[in-house]
Length: 255
Image: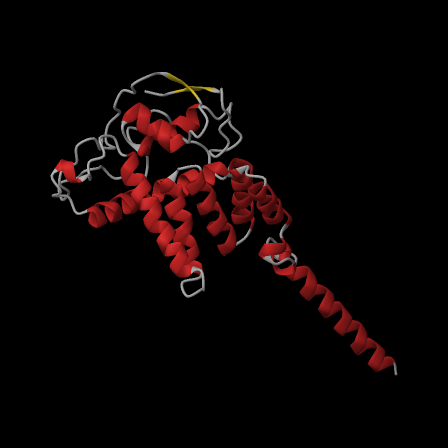
């Protein structure tokens, strides 16, 4: 009897260690499905209330806290698309497709990627890919190149949105991870400014208007979306995240 009691005690202790060992960074993720996460549900509530910026912040928090938060990537992409900010929308849609390539929603998400690509092309200064521009540029190839060259930028913006990284030094001659557009292997596209060097902005301050995003402001100021992260870094005292732009805020536009 005494031996049985000892065995049961050891078994109970082993179970306790097992539960303690599992109670790390992923414990809440294991206990609570993503769709039942409080931040996810809050984001869905904001989405129903037509408050895409607040919804976006909630979904980004879920992505930051969980590995493989596919549904939050999907909703974040949709919110960025609603805010007419296509580059991060493409990034989050692609993350969803990476995590759930064969889901029932995958065909719809692929279509949303195409919609975001078209939106991005339309936002480029001078609309270089319209038929009147000569029609010599392969739209699909250029879009793929732009996506590849900005993938690291989107990762950095997403991390900064959640406070995951310190800003890069302002005297860095080039934003890390952003390749020059265009390079030697790409036809020159009118209106697309290269990311190399430091092009002087068209203005030094900017008052946020309804519907603005950092990508849009970067295009207005520099003619390229690649400086959106620099604008965020220069205005971190006025923004809680890269997605938190308030109408009427005066932003500093860095050189």
